Length: 183
Image (tube, rainbow, N blue to C red; front, side, top):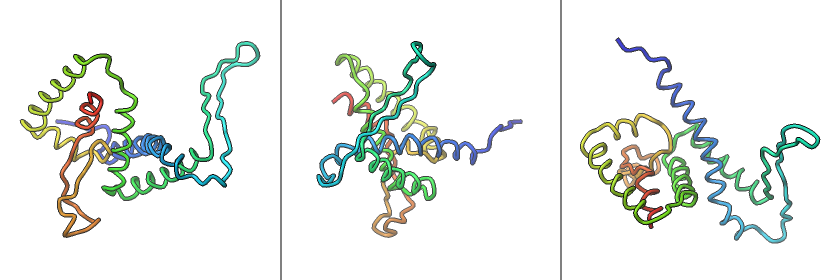
């Protein structure tokens, strides 16, 4: 007798909200260099600061000190529109935009100390893929059951159905980030 505490719908809703916040931030960070190049020079670019402190007087301690500008707010707005589109429709393009943003941020933020660490990671990923992805259906089942941008999806019926495609091939973000980090 198995009993579930939370149904799959509630877990998917929680994951959707979690990936909404992270996806908006990751996509905004990814768009920022592009926005710097296309932002019109005649639009004022004001500077802002978000500062959270703890305590008062001499014992005041900074918890968050984040500086941003108008371009960052525009990126955040555009990313929020994509995020709402993802949460409401779960469209494959919105999923892929978030997935690519996560992958690019992962490649940018993770660092390998030496080549041997990269070889160990690539070897481990190879063994993992051979057993868990190609040897069993566990990972495919997990990837299909969670509605989260943890994979890139490529429509196989794009020519027949257009943007409403429903038959997808999948590529996990780990298969992008680990080799990308090694390169």
